[in-house]
Image (cartoon, rainbow, N blue to C red; front, side):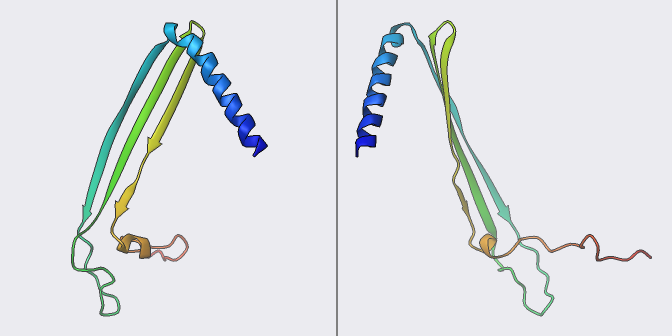
Length: 112
């Protein structure tokens, strides 16, 4: 509990000191959002008579949100922060096994 109080006081003092710099500060907030969608038509091969993949299309969506914060306090003092949030939504089948057919292993081949 005492540690949290000390952290709160330190944070408050830091904010108060920062307020003194703000009237002369240049503030810049930038960022971007992008999304990437992939849809797979799984291969249809059967080694044991049963295909390991479903007959339907599978897919995944990657999203990325990035925020950049820059604060120029004085001529030689600046503060830069960046935060990235990147969730991914994908078909349940991708968690269970790889999508692609396994290839040759490095030491498991022969030359003819």
